[in-house]
Image (cartoon, rainbow, N blue to C red; front, side, top):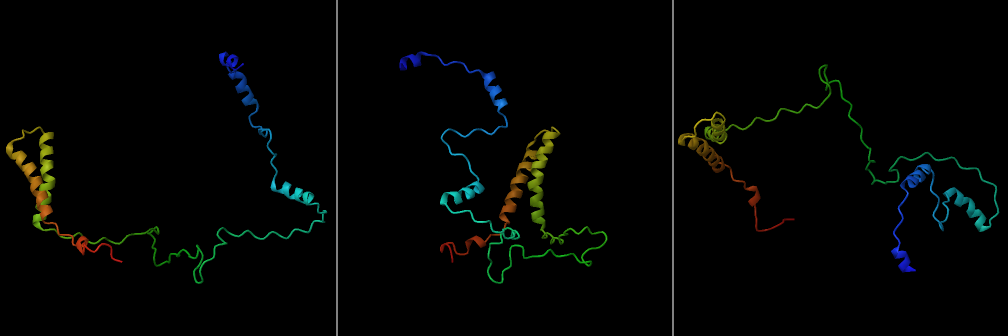
Length: 184
């Protein structure tokens, strides 16, 4: 019999009928699979509890009034002297802080002035930036790259970069005591 089933070709599925069944059942709650227990809510289970234990039905006691719902996090206990998570108040702006033109937004203080650089550093930066700009300008304007133009552009960049690197201050913060490892 197994050979007979293996020789048969599978039958084509009627897609139109399958789609019609899906559309017809749209929005309906599917039935429970066979052998499953039907769903019961907590209230239904509470009613069945009295029947299962055989306890006689007692007259229903009046329900106590519902307590006010506590805000989230009310079960969290903080250490003495420490307020809750919302133990702060927003500072109200005073009239002294705002004038008629101020919208009430933060205005940062003036930044400190940049340190003054010496003439050597200024010329080094001019060479680092000016050398490649000279080469770019020569390429855009289709100038002939003569030996002096190339030397001035490439040499200016390399010389200015070397000058800036040589004049850097050593950083002694990393070399306090490298042989001791972590200090606790």
